[in-house]
Image 1: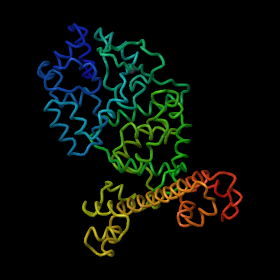
Image 2 (image 1 turned 60 degrees about the vertical axis):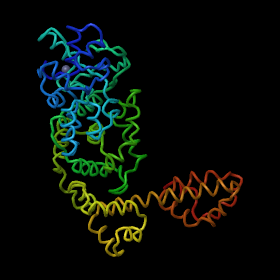
Image 3 (image 1 turned 90 degrees about the vertical axis):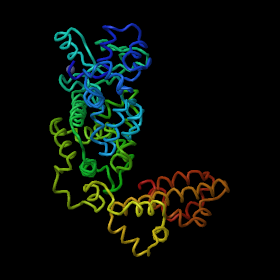
Image 4 (image 1 turned 90 degrees about the horizontal axis):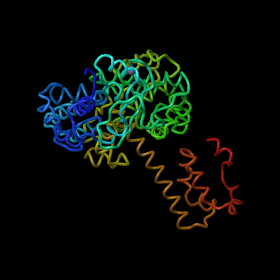
Length: 446
Ligand SMILES: [Zn+2]
């Protein structure tokens, strides 16, 4: 049936001709437990042979009948080549390695989903129901055609699960309490469908548009720094965040800690993260508008051109593809160095020449100084904790006198962490607190 997943096809095959779950798996894939793989089957080569290519070759099956479409545009051309090669060799498990997404990333967010109205139409047209690909993409909780909440099946049983209008567990899936929540989910579905049709995305373009929006919402203290606590609170109170927060399974997503790495581009972002972030960030606008803006950002176009004057050099570097202009051995040397002197000595050049690399590659300069800042903060905290471990009766005054540099540095950069360390000093020794150069109140306000 058109638009069905390979799992849906197999389930229909099993309904018509199958005897036991294991036997159907053996026949189609040479694997008794093939029914476990609800999104991406492995051993496609045998499947193509058995089905005489009726669903296409290995790669066509992957692209047309599995949810890889949403992940595909995030892969580099090298990774795409690897996935092509590996899918032809017929090992689906290796495909995950080739794509750079782990198996758990690809599987965990994938319960089977179906739409009652789609099933009605399928029954009228062909007399049987199947699992549709458009419902299995990450971030699709409502039917892209009918706009209705989908029914979820998170069965871990070794069976070929049949789509059904009756959920096995009525508490599974999301519960929607308002039209605005449903709208947010529709936006997610729209973005997911747009992604699945793309061949490439400019993650830099997405990042820049996201940074602009987060700044305008006051979620970023500076262009480079996300206020995580504020962002968490903000996400939880969005319509999307409230809806996800009600679901046991989606609670972890709601926490919002993943936003920093998504926006900073430190690691490859799961497509679901971009989908959720965009739907939430722009939820005051119409779903169509958000999806269009997302597509523009994917191509690297900026809908909001006038903000470019506030752009920092490292942001411009993101826009230009997020790549370093410095060669990889230079990036490596800075990765391994905490001072300019170390980097220069690793590179075998003068400090002046090493500094020139930083000036030439703003992304390198930004990442390097950011890492050093974080490491310095960790180091200062570690020293203070260690000092308290070694000398549990140390007073605040003593600590301030002994570790003046560390305390000052933490006070300037992360007063919250400093406070949690100071809280380790028992109250009876707080009499000496007056020696502090700042009041407790001013510390709290930071
Ligand atoms: Zn539908």
